[in-house]
Image 1 (spheres, helix red, strand yellow):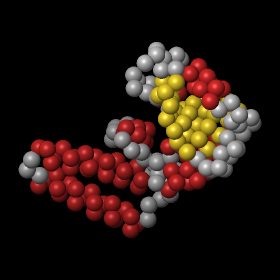
Image 2: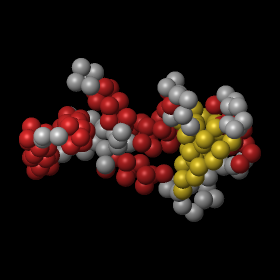
Image 3: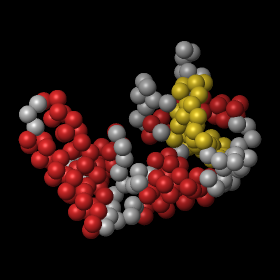
Image 4: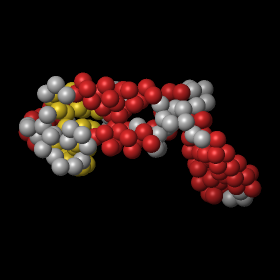
Length: 194
């Protein structure tokens, strides 16, 4: 595999050669946040008014794995809404943190939409949902208490950690995440609990 060039340069080159007619593009993800690792990829959000619908595609260019999130000028809103309903605002977060690679005077408005969604937080859980989630938590805790094998205990503990994090975050109207983003969301909300 060829050596990697700088992420911003690679992203700009990718957009200018592969999608020169798009209206806008953003570079997001770990390279933008200063958290890149040896396995990090380039997350690029593309806005192109000629697209009929959104799609996601993977590329390898200039030594980088690239994850492209392609949208037309309205399709991204459905993903914003879907992400917010599940309280994992992946696309709004990527848009707000994104570095502009190309813009035909549309990025500011899209970023404003994303920021407003993030600032409003997820929808509050109903009392019924809180009680149901509390039941799942105590049921899983009982499983851990009664567990007699280390291997099963590891899996139960993993589930319990996820459930506890979700409960803390959602009962406080905070965004959550999946995988490493669960920890990041909890750390952002309450570093001591994390």
